[in-house]
Image (spheres, rainbow, N blue to C red):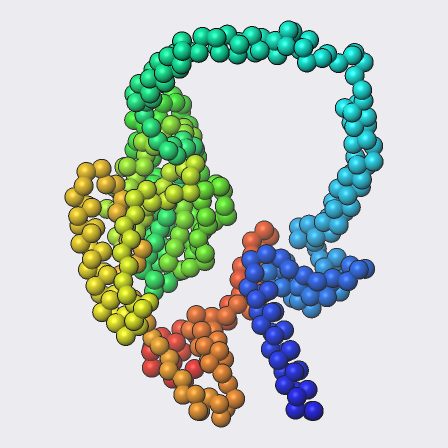
Length: 406
């Protein structure tokens, strides 16, 4: 009985640990509180947002925070209470009053159906339908004529299923190889910002219709290591990754954005080597690539041929890109793979690991923390949240041979 009980306890603990890991990885706030407002559990997202330790937030510690975060958390129950009270007042007073005036019987006697057919819009519609039935062949011929005229006019109109939205903003997607550090991504973003300033300053008189002494460039914001917050409904922010940067540009004349896309794309391709930069205009539809060519292989069916299959896919992709590049009107041509990058795979001896009492997850977490770092907290400086990451010193992780001593 004791062994069965121990297995049940171990299964429950493992399930709770898995559930906590899932909740901690959620991008939203998650917490559990008692009826009196005492906080019993909160996920890592709340800890990162507040910059406080979990032990300082449980219980009634969340009500003792200072600064903007404390004011925001303390204002939540007040705002929710006020909103619920206002909803209660509206439900008990305004809604019955509105129903009384809407559902009360009319003062005048309601007209019969025959009287309605002789008066007002209902009478006009009744007479119109009656005459159309009497002259049905003439009405049918007129409908065909109207249909032909409409088709002729529509054939001379410019058609676009989702037209590009002319706005004051456009943005740059900057991609680098997968194994580059964050400093290289930052350098590429800074170089891209310089190119954007040069092109806009040199094109102010030719692309802008406004006669003003103010500069055409209003602002420029860069997000390094991930996409910024969603500032347009058709743009999905990129997940945090060290080889990606996003630059959001705002100009004073929205008619100039379309004229700046082409020159900016050409100059960025020339002056920022080693990076794949795409200048994107805001769109009313979420279609990022108007034309896509999908090439699939057999690696999912037969893993033994994965390496050969990847090489074949790259060869076919380069041939397809060469053919598409020869077509007129091609402005940007990209693939979603990028160049090959070296990878180091750690092989774990399961027998030795079991003797020591560690699992594959323990080895993976410790090696990732030593090389890439593990977040241990957040430092709050004003309205900025600076992550605190613990990892080995550069001299202890600069060579591949040092992985054996992790």
